[in-house]
Image (cartoon, rainbow, N blue to C red; front, side, top):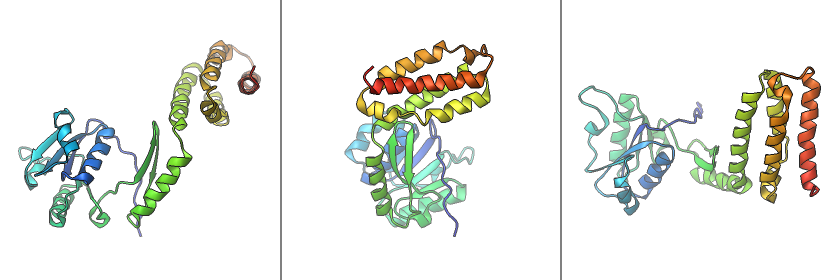
Length: 250
């Protein structure tokens, strides 16, 4: 048995097609828009929310039945959509969309029919830059949603702040530390800092300010220190000491 290949796709500015205008199609459209896609929606009827999206520059609504020509640029025989979602309540229409997309080599998701899909959409937990996707390969979407709910509880809103911090600090260290081995050691050590408890406890901003001041004062980061190993160990100890003093109220 072949297993699905998990990827995170960049859809920013990409054109995507959703066939269907009901509640399921609406959820698919919202998810694609969150990813930065430009979405074309084809249906004879639309939900109220989809109707409201008509004025958005990233959304095009076609009030018509599905026609194969929608999926092909006849002037160039070019398939204009990066991926296609068939989300109607008509199995024949969904199957027709699948057949055309497959012939054109397009990625296609047929809602609730993984056997007719070249990709399936997992249950997702989002915390800013953190994205946790859960899939059962179509075996049990309900189980995937249940697991996602458990992860939603385990990974709270603080992870968005945490990932933003790690991203910003990583860029800062990369700009100041030329030695690759030193950078890797710092990156590894960063994961051991008890940052999440500081975010939850409300002491994070004060600690982060002290951390950045400490970084700016370190001459060895610009290659001025003789013994990098000793200097780095002292710096990491200083960072740990900042955390301990904050916990102690100092």
